[in-house]
Image (cartoon, helix red, strand yellow):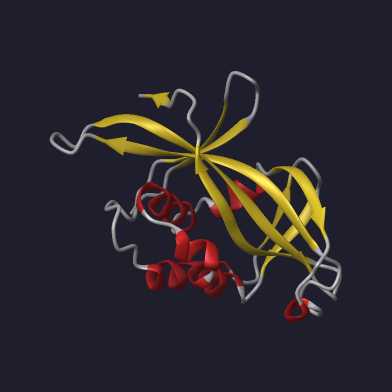
Length: 177
């Protein structure tokens, strides 16, 4: 399958990662096991957040955390489809590279005393997914989503992608074909 990822800028100059390859077309019953298996291919990779020059690694805990997180379990409909497709494509490198709005927060959970010893960072990134006409199969538009990349600052000093949370469809005018 040919993966199609591109980056465009909106009218305000903010980057949007356009993901044209939809792996999960239905809105119900996302196969998170399949998403997890796909994400395992990224383990060990490192990507730079262009805005901050931070190097973010994909650790072995990312696929399982994304699949089983409380955030993922709460998702349904278009947001679940968007999260699955943002991860089950080759979009992760571009989503990290285009991330903005770095914020730090203290680690409050004892279970993360080692893996997030120096706290957490959150970055915001935006992406667009195509919407097809159910009857004709023709591309109608792209819906734009915002998602937070949750990054843990580990005891080894490195930053690791931990989860992608708080996905929200933007209510602005979608990208027209």
